[in-house]
Length: 74
Image 1 (cartoon, rainbow, N blue to C red):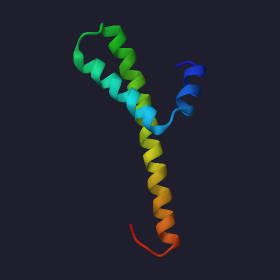
Image 2 (cartoon, helix red, strand yellow):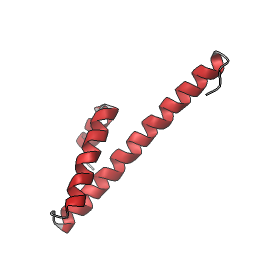
Image 3 (cartoon, one colour):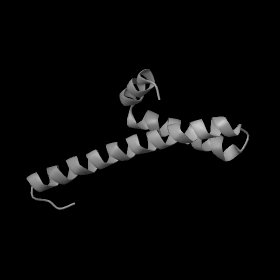
Image 4 (spheres, rainbow, N blue to C red):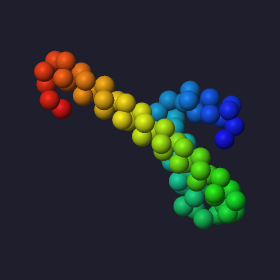
């Protein structure tokens, strides 16, 4: 992945990343794309998936910390 593409991915909102991931899944499931493009899309999808997972984990941590600060359990 090129640096420009990585920077663009980092600036994408969670929702935009998820939307792009859904487009990739749809394209891969269609079975209508050449193998080399499918492999490329798979790699992009994995990176987006990991980025989304990281954001979810960070959000969970913030919620847990906030709950601990005010004495509530989540």
